[in-house]
Length: 70
Ligand SMILES: [Zn+2]
Image (tube, rainbow, N blue to C red; front, side, top):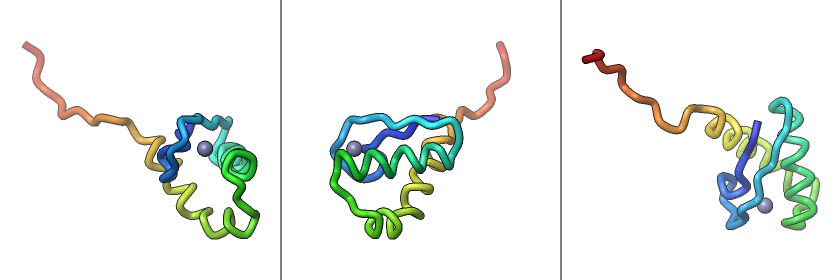
């Protein structure tokens, strides 16, 4: 799973990866601390937003309406 940092409302082009949602959340926390200087308290208050961004990015980018084949 990947999450673009920009999807969390930053102007950062970093992509964070993890094997599962929890791993990705942990990786995002690490990145937010290192690259953006967030504290554990700030991250705790953003946990719901981070999981929301992961959930959004896990969905297909464009859902096509099925068309009959010609
Ligand atoms: Zn970032």
